[in-house]
Figure 1 (cartoon, rainbow, N blue to C red):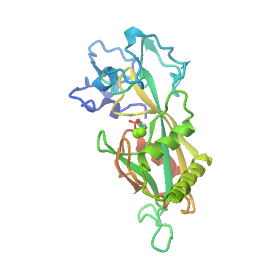
Figure 2: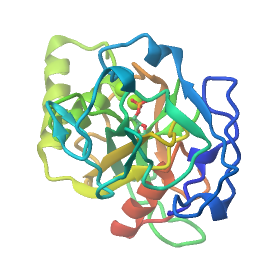
Figure 3: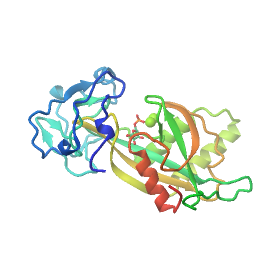
Figure 4: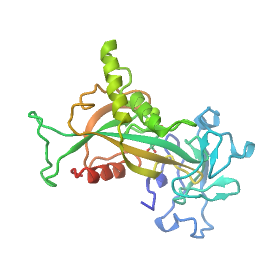
Length: 279
Ligand code: RP5
Ligand code: MG
Ligand code: MG
């Protein structure tokens, strides 16, 4: 977990930028490395100064390591260093400086809702995996439009927003876009979703995300929460429809061989372990 890998991917996403290659033994900032010559990059979408992004660092002085107005600039990883006015990635070098595609200097907070159910056969009996002999979980997965990778339908916490709200909002936007149903059915669906997200989810993970968009000065952090439909009759039959940054949405078997975006596979492994399910 310490050696972020996707944060060192050769090609910076959505650009022609090549990261300065960082070998495993030079990731840690404490390793003196005079030859380190990272590329500076801020994506055009961030330079346009959208409301979700900070201004450039020369024109404002954010309060790092604290709640800065409505923006949470604290890290789940502890106090991060700030060097020459710029926050330093707590997991170490990435080969790119600046913010890349991320809006905030320092931590960019997200929330990841992991909705699960048991995989069942035609008789509604749990399906066990032939190798592990354990029951198989399924989770709601989206195919991200930006990179085409399957992922948890997570998203950014808006300034001042409660994480519990982000979880429900992002799930609704990405996995239940504009379901065509009668007003009565819609009300019923909304009620089920609200009930589920109001139930006590299992907090799976809280911390750094090894996201390909990370840089030396900006990185993703998340709170991942699992909401599990044990009986298979609450949200299991919800109509799913992809929306916002999701191109597709479907229930996917939880299995270690399924490739997922960023460090999402790690979060699912934690869910599988907790629920004694196949991984
Ligand atoms: C990941 O990026 C998080 O785990 C979350 O799933 C996602 C949030 O970014 P967007 O989906 O808003 O791009 O690091
Ligand atoms: Mg979103
Ligand atoms: Mg998203």
